[in-house]
Amino acid sequence: MARRSSISSKIKTYSQILFCVRFFRYFLFFYSFISFIFWFLNCFEVDWLYLFNWLFIIPYKMVSSFYVPQGVSADFTLAIIGGIAFFVGFLSDVFSNTLQQKIEDLKEEEFEQIKQRRNRERKTAKVAVPSSVEVNTEEKLENSKLLFLIMPHVNKIRRKKDDLELTFQEVELWKQRVNKKLLDNILYSKPMQKGYYRKNLFLIYKDFNYVDDFIYYIRPTLDSIILEFRRYGIMVSFSYVLSALSLMPNLEKELDCMDTILSLNFINEVVVTNRFKITYDNKAIQQYAMQLKGEYNLSKNLAISNKQPIYALIDKKRRGE
Image (cartoon, rainbow, N blue to C red; front, side, top):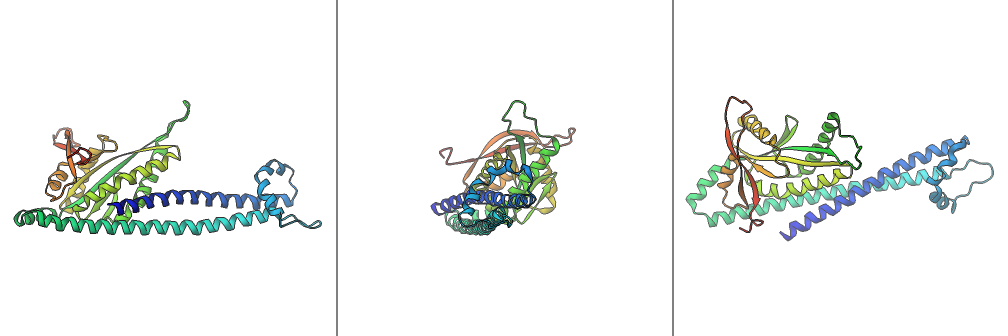
């Protein structure tokens, strides 16, 4: 567990550094661009350029320490500044790519440790559980897959009373960006299938036993996305639900049921279906307990009643169990 925490801490630290390096890279490329533009305009002695002298005072002094224009030749100082900015930006780009690869390698290492720990837990379960019960449990879990459906909620962080709310188009655009970011951050877990159901992202994992590790990592992943989008002035929250899937032909039906649960707007809670509970109860080792949220009609047809219990997953350690 200490090793996993160490890797997670490194991933978080490197991700923060990567964000800063990328911002610095974009700044340098932009600064290089305007340096060349202003140098070009300066060659034609455009009068109003002096208004922007403050942008280049420090770099100009640094370059002037080793370059002095001779005679009536053109002053290449701004061009040199632009070239240096572009070169440093290029180095920053190389460094950011290296850092990104390092993060991906750490995620792979983390994923391998998850698999190893899951194998150890299975071996422990085989020792702890009588053989007859073990066979029965394995049969029930053998074909069960883990199904995950998530819906982001986005709102503008209003810093002033007269700030305008996001338009419908802006909300949809930000949701797409959040979903893309989530997908990028979670692909290391290698879902067997991914897609969108009514604009909401879903993931399928072929082994239901992956559930404990999935929950362990989805929480900090969502927290990091929430933190990242706050920098853009966007407040993000999530509704998501987990279920179990035995037969792939039932996928659309199960997603439809889960989509109805999303509409109940349980925010930032690990909500699960009754099908999930039944499957999870058959696990030999259970890290989470179930808390009943209530019974709800999950049918979209108002003439048909389809009351089912919905549960929230609670960490047993937090409950002191």
